[in-house]
Length: 246
Image (cartoon, rainbow, N blue to C red; front, side, top):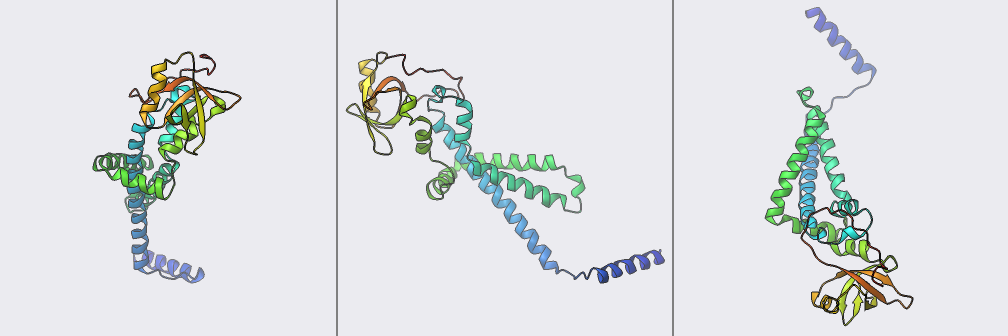
């Protein structure tokens, strides 16, 4: 046994000399582990904060008339979940897998289970952040200041401000719709719109989505009003043709 230890020691010493290996301070490993855990905790906290913001956005986006545009479910998902959420969550999962599999008992941890545990933790914290109001701070930071995700108003413009495709969005006053860019569009009531309903859109005092057809003189014939709704999150598409009320 002593000969074996001696031989092993000689081999290790010989390899150290051949490869010119130098000892690394214990503080280096401690510092590296601290950095890894800081990255892991930050990624989990940021992912949870973004998830709480997603819960908040769902309540806003689900009210929009996505059923009148192509691929409504896909568009809702892309608008609700910003790309940065997948980035931070992926960082957290990768770092967690690396950290736990590098331990002395790393062989006991399955990568899939580690990733699943991180996801569950993010979901739990995301729900807690939603009820504690942290989602508002996250939304103000990521959307308003850093602009890493589009705001609800930007999403509305992106999806529904396409006059040439038969849909516009903006605030209506005296039969004039004004969009976010300050452009004015004259509105004309279509055949399927009752006069009272057409007049009432001015009382909403908030951006409203209108469907219809743009005329050669840049007026817009209103065929349908995209009302705020409280229905199921994802709805089956209802094809809309802008010339049905003209």
